[in-house]
Amino acid sequence: MGHHHQQHDDKSKGDWRKEEKHHKHLEQLAKLGTAAAGAYAMHEKHKAKKDPEHARSHRIKEEIAATIAAGSAGFAIHEHHKKKEAKKQARHGHHH
Image (cartoon, rainbow, N blue to C red; front, side):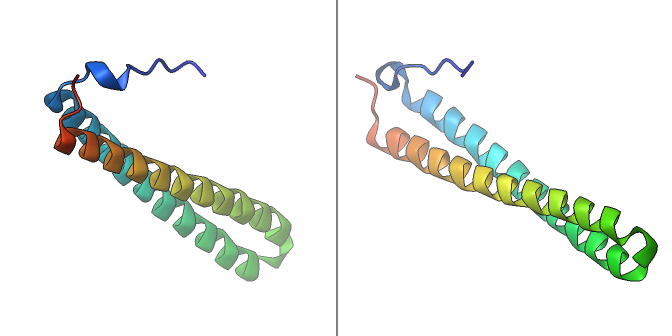
């Protein structure tokens, strides 16, 4: 929406390498977010079993964390593909 992407034609090989590193970094952060949210979901699932009085609240938190983990995993996949695209562009030297 608010992103302005450069035209592929006016990037140098170094720009593509920089973009590849950028996407790699975002992919790694997304993987970390996936792991953290997944761990929190498991934690809340355990709390729901151990604390029946507040089980509903724990189940809600578990579902929210699981949803965040899934979204973060999707973002990691997206960034992985963007990284591969930038790597391919750098390899082929697309700077017309």
